[in-house]
Every structure is written in structure tokens, then in C-alpha cells.
Image 1 (cartoon, rainbow, N blue to C red):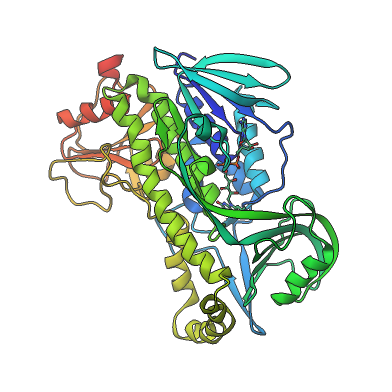
Image 2 (spheres, rainbow, N blue to C red; image 1 turned 90 degrees about the vertical axis):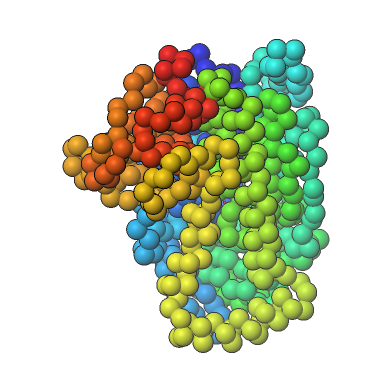
Length: 508
Ligand SMILES: Cc1cc2nc3c(=O)[nH]c(=O)nc-3n(C[C@H](O)[C@H](O)[C@H](O)COP(=O)(O)OP(=O)(O)OC[C@H]3O[C@@H](n4cnc5c(N)ncnc54)[C@H](O)[C@@H]3O)c2cc1C
């Protein structure tokens, strides 16, 4: 490989997705991971539609779906009433994945690690970043510690090393930090009394209790909130305390075996910057918030594929600084919004002030049955699903989002996610997301758009026979529209490709 040398620190979901994408696009990638063993108990359980979309070009989605529950059901226990909610088959035609996927984080990590191994990128386990220094030529000299000490020179350092990021500290990037007043109890347990055909959830005055039939080490994964400081961090939670959490919910379940348990303190943390010269932060190293809505891992995966292609292509860009800076300017605002939304949701689910407790114990139980008769649950859920699934995210203000000319109005603008849709190509009917399910930049040419010469092999052109006109849409490797041009021969096309680092005419 002759692409840039990238050291990814941390083999969590963000680090592995970043490594996979950058490698698929020609970078030379090393991944180091402090933990000697691959397995660790899962935290995330929910994988959202947008994550599946962005991972599709990396060839891992079939393996993820094979391990996921893609038609999950949730049973809400509300004051003696049970409401059954299906979290699949939403009426959304613009995604191939109109469902929530319940999958253990350990499975996501195993699929990503397998994909890296298949491509010849091993995860170097038991190796940690110790220090780094900047070199006069813009590279970084890193010092690694594992069985022994070693050094290497890299072009980019990607800090995907979690909430207590070493990379963030070594790069002296400050982070705002606030502890939540609640903590989470996680446990893998066997119980009597719960039907395993659904996940069960109850939010009483004391907080939220989830039971997913998807434990790592037993049938059920319990996730419950409680006031912080109730149990020592890092020590198993006594079975009687787990039973009290279920009784408090109340969920009709009796704990019969505890395979594993732990208490997780929660914090709200945002790095002041996502980039310092050749150092980048992604995933929990950049942002941490409550688990409400299952956003953390999903947001980290999106950071990863936003950054991976920029690192891989920056060397070929006419303005590498603008390309690399766009990572922070696109992704940090997303984290801020996600943190605000998850904070509100977490307050409602588990807040310890009288208003939050009243909301959960009186107002929701009274209102939910009424609401469900007046409004359709499915309609309410579909609206919430789009936001939670991160399908609404876009980068319209990014310097990489360019509108050129009065192209006929379309459903999508520069900076927006390319929605899935039926199209016609030379071989017959197809779907947009099938066409773009290959790593690289995709050019969607209108029927009469001119051909482009000298496209490098990471740019794929598709002529859409049912789209009249001479224009084109350039789709970035992370599935967002970069350029809409009314004329496929306009200078803006070559300019955009050159900025993205993939103009074969300029560099080939
Ligand atoms: C209770 C709970 C439930 C959650 N549920 C969901 C959910 O349903 N959906 C969701 O999207 N998110 C969820 N999350 C959040 C999700 O678990 C995290 O956002 C996710 O793990 C972050 O992934 P990451 O790759 O950024 O970091 P991490 O998973 O923290 O991985 C970082 C890795 O870096 C390694 N490392 C650290 N320092 C070094 C070093 N110096 N050198 C080498 N390696 C190093 C660590 O060992 C670790 O393996 C939940 C979180 C909690 C606490």
C-alpha cells in the first residue's frame, strides 16, 4: 500500500470502522489495542439504520444482520398495563433498513475485527500508545508499549481510545466533563417470569429498567439506572440488588442466576477539538453521553467513516487542510445536538428530580394509553425512529457541500444523506444504495451527462437512465451528497473531485 500511514489507537467500534474504511480506500493502517483479549461485555445493544447504511460499502452488513434481531419487539410495562411495540417494518421507503437492529456490541466488534483480518489488517492486542512527538515534516513519531517498547512514524494518529483517551491527553485537547447523577447497572442474568419474545422496559419513579433477551453470557441483559454511588464501581452487583431493581420497575421476573454484572458511571463529555494537526479524535474519545436512545456507538461509527475517507484521500487533495478540517466542522455539531437530545431523553427516563419522577410515575402512565388510542403508535414511532436512526443528519454548511447551477429540484441537496430510491441503469432497475455499496466516491450521472475521463479506480460512475438532464451528483464515501452540478462538464466537477482528493485527471 502506498497511501498515508495511519495509526488507529483503540479497537472499539469507532477504531475498527475507521481502519476498515481507510484501508478499503488505500491507506496503510495499523490498529493497536490495549486489551489483550477481544471479548469484553457489551454495552451497546442498538444499531441504527444509518450505521448499517454507512457500513454497507465496507462489506460487513450481511454479517451484522445475520447476528442481529432485525424485527425486535418491545413490551412497555406501564402501571399494570402492557403495551407491545414492534420496532421494524416502519413505512420508510428511502432506506434498506427500516428497522431497529438489536445486536450486542461484542458482535459488532467481532464482525469488524473479522473484516479487518480478512483484509490483512490484524489488531495488535496488548499494545498501547505511550507517547508521540511531532516531526518537522508533519508526521508523528509514536512510542508503543506491549511485550516490549517500539517506535514508528505515521502520517496520522486516530484517537479512538474511548472516554479516557490517551491520545486526547497527549495532544492536550481539553474536554468539558460533567458526571450524571445516575449510574447504570448492567447484568447478564437468567430469570423466571419474562417472556423472551420481546425486550421488556419499565420506567418507574426510581428510574428505567430494560431487560433484553440478548445477554452476552446469559439469556437476559439487564440495564437499569439508579442514583450514582449506590454500588462500588468495577465490582459485581449482589443478586439481591438486581432483584430489587426488577421489583422496583416493576417487572414480573425472578433472578435465578447471575453470570456477570457491573456498575457503569456515566458522564457527559465533549472534546474542545476533534483535530490537532495530524491527530484526530473519534467516537467516545471525542464525545460521551448517556446511553438514552442508543446513540454513542452509532455516532462513533459515523465519525469513523466521515474521517476514514478524508485521511485516506487528503494526500491527493488540492486543499488537504480544508478536507481534514471539515471532519471537526461536520461532526462536532452533530455530537452537540446528540448530547442535548440524549440528555433530555435521559432526564425523562431516569431523572431524580420531582418533575422527572412525576412524569414517569404518573403522567406517562396516564397519558400513554390515551395517546395510543388517539394517535397511531406506529406513526409516532416512525417519526422518532428517523431521528434516533440518525437518518436526518446532514452537512449542508460544509465546504465540501457544493451546489452548482440551477439543477432541477430533487429530493436531496448537497450535504444531505443520499436517500435510497429506485433507479434505472443500463442493466435494468436498481436501487441507489446498491449502486453505492462499494467503497469510494460515486458519480450519479444524469441520462445525457458527458462522460468523465481519467477517473481513478476509487471513483465509480453510474448513468441513471430515468434521470433526464446533463448534470451529476457526486456522493462521498460516507454516503452524503458532496456536489450537485447542473452540467456534468462544469469546472465545479473537477474542482470538487480535486478537493476530495480523487481527481484522476489532476493526479493520475
Ligand atoms: C450502559 C451503556 C449502554 C450503551 N448502549 C448503547 C447503544 O445501545 N447504542 C449505542 O450506539 N451506544 C451505546 N452505548 C455507548 C457505546 O458503548 C460507546 O459509545 C462505544 O463503546 C464507543 O466506542 P469507541 O470505539 O469510541 O470506544 P470504546 O468502545 O471505549 O473503545 C476504545 C478502545 O480503546 C482502547 N484503548 C484505550 N486507551 C488505549 C491506548 N492508550 N492504547 C491502545 N488502546 C487503548 C480500549 O481498550 C478500548 O478497547 C452505551 C454505553 C453504555 C455505558
